[in-house]
Structures are given as C-alpha cells and as structure tokens.
Amino acid sequence: MASIFNFILAHQGDAADPELLHWIRERLDQIFGTGPWVVVAIMGFIILSIPVFIIVFYLMQAKRRAVIELIHQDRQERAR
Image (cartoon, rainbow, N blue to C red; front, side):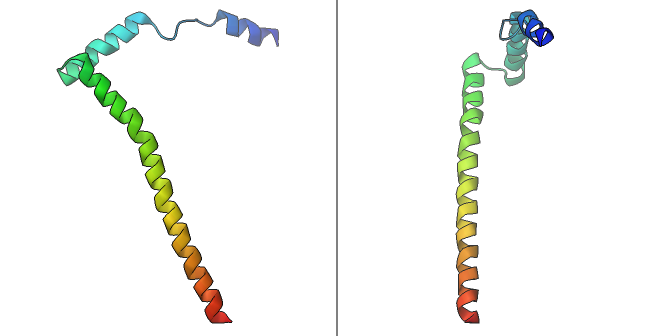
C-alpha cells in the first residue's frame, strides 16, 4: 500500500509538459496553415459533435426498438 502512495506522490503534478504543448500547437498551426482560432473552432466542433452523435444514435435505436415491439405485439394478437 505504501508503494502506491509513493508512486502517487512521485507523479508529476503538471497537466502536461509545456514544451510538448508548444510543439503540438506549432505543428497544428503548420498543418492547418491558419491561426489558433481555427484549431479551437475545429476542436470545439469535434468535442460538441460527439454527444450529438450519441443522442442521434440513441434516438434511432429507440425508434427501431419501438417498431420491433409493435411488430411483436401484432404477431401475438394474430396468434390469438
């Protein structure tokens, strides 16, 4: 148990290496050839599109389940 505690204490407290973040930002600017706001807009779009995709997928599956349930109920009524 003490080794886990020592591992946590020895871990770097920074979120990321500032030099690495600077290098990544420079590479993204080189790739997109534009300012940092375009990268922010693209990343924001990606981040916001993930939950939207999940909600749309859930609604499509809910509609499919409802149709299957109606078909199942119809078959049960015909069998009677």
